[in-house]
Every structure is written in C-alpha cells, then in structure tokens.
Length: 347
Image 1 (cartoon, rainbow, N blue to C red):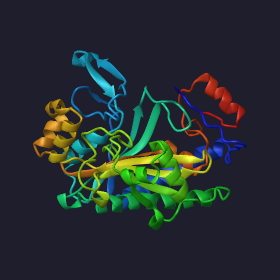
Image 2 (tube, rainbow, N blue to C red; image 1 turned 30 degrees about the horizontal axis):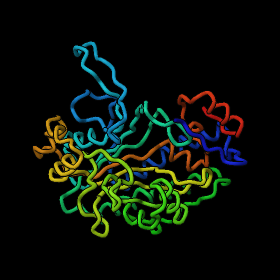
Image 3 (cartoon, helix red, strand yellow; image 1 turned 120 degrees about the vertical axis):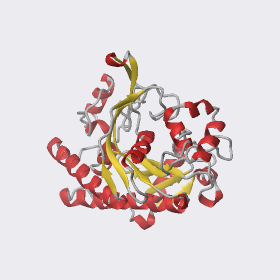
C-alpha cells in the first residue's frame, strides 16, 4: 500500500529551476568527495544481469525483479538490477583492484514491489561503491572509520548547499558526533517500539545515527530489518561483541519529522560467513550459483561496500517533502492530487 506524509504548512524553499540546479551541484560535489575519501574510481554499471547467476541483489528475499527474455540468447531471462552489491565484488576482481582502493558507479534500478510514498519510488538511483580490504580490516572499528568518512563527505556537501542557497541552514552534527549503536542495544533502549519507531526516536535524539547489525536476530528472536544472506556479514562478532559488521546510516529529517535511511553498507561475507548465513536462512542451494562459487573458490577479494541514495540525499539537502520533487517517476493519481493540495510539486 502506498503512503503519504503531508507536513503541515509545507512550502518548498526552492523553485523548480533552483531545485534542478541544486540536484546537479549536489551530485557532482558529493561523488567527488566520496571518491576522494574512499579512494574510488568510477566504473560503468549494468542496468540488467542474467537471471540465475546469483549476481542480482535479493534485498529482503521477497521482492520480484523486473525481467524480460533476450531474443538472441534463446529467450534467456535478464533481470533489471535491484542493486549491485554482488556485481561490484566481481568487478573488483576483474579490475585487479588492490586493498585500500575501490570503485563506485551510478546505479539505476527498478523495484516494482516498492511501497510508494515520500521516501520510496519505483525508480532507484544510488551511488554503489565497493572497496578491497584485507582480513585485518574485517572489524567493527574499520567499519566505523569508513562510515565516518562517508558521513564527513555528507557534512561538507550540506555546507556547499548552504553557500548556494543561504535559506537552507545546515543541521547535520559534525562527524565526531555521528552516533553508533547496535540494533540489539537500540531494542533494549526502546523495548516497546517497533524497529522503524526506534529509528525515529534515536535519530531525533542524535541527528545522525549508524545502526549496526542489520539482518541478525536480536534478543527477542526478530531482526531489526532484513538483509540478503550472501553479501553483508551480519553474524561475525561486531560492536560490543554483538553480531554484525554492517549497518544503516540514518539522518533526522526536520521536514518529515522522521528518520530517513540514506545508506546501507557493510563488510562483505567471507567464505565462513557466507556458509553460516546461508545455512541460517536455509539457502545453501545458492552455493551452486556463479557468484557464490567464485567466492568459495577464493577468486573474489575481501571487500566492504554499500549504496547511497542519490534522490534521497538531494531531497534531504534541499529540504523537500517527497522524493518525487527530485526525480521523475510514476505515482498513484490520488497521491499526485493530494500532494498538489499541500504544495508538494511532483515532477
């Protein structure tokens, strides 16, 4: 079901022309800062991959990929990517990237099962990035260092936006005040709240939060949120000896008065974590797929990686109430009508 948040008294701070210029400047400035912070080179990404090779991202395991037959390949099925979590690791191997360096790309995807609303669209655009690491880097301390570097690029970008448009005042805490917390600690802090409400509560308190351990089972036997078992490592020992070397970066959005997730990232599975997580999920059959065989054969490097939502980032910086004010997509007609009544101008 679609949803819509209509902030009371909402008035865009920028007109359409200013918004388009702001989007351009944000995307150019942020990706240069990201590549500099993490030492990443840009590569070209696919829009679709062959079905049945284990390369496409499974997200929560229930979303259907948009697929189509390829005439010249005997009607073999191709799938529009959900994200490039596994493809990037294959590309690191193909490019022979050394530890301490990596790649990033503009990822465009279609998620037909997305629940449409202020933060969710059928069209997904993000910077997907991946960096080669060593076995010694597979620690929560290294994860936190990388997260802090990415967040620092976000803070610098916010100040650039303020220089362009002084009416948009910076609100992000400095990088030293980015708050790290494990999903289990968050559950214990707010035991009576559902996971999303916990995110809102902790983000309202700190402004910028990284929640570690997305995908592992918590003390109540439930997961904070789902994660495919074959890319992020969410079972190895992490923060305060709790499981997980991955997480989500969330910011408090004053316009919507809620938290928004801007990035999902993590240290990727090694052979042991892959087997452990596939067994937990009853998905050992995936070990027969191309990607998984490559990982088990030691022909893929150890890595850390993630995605950063481009439209969401622009939406946050430009103080917009709906992602449809940033990108062109398809929306229910009643949503378009209601948005117009509340000064939300969908592209």
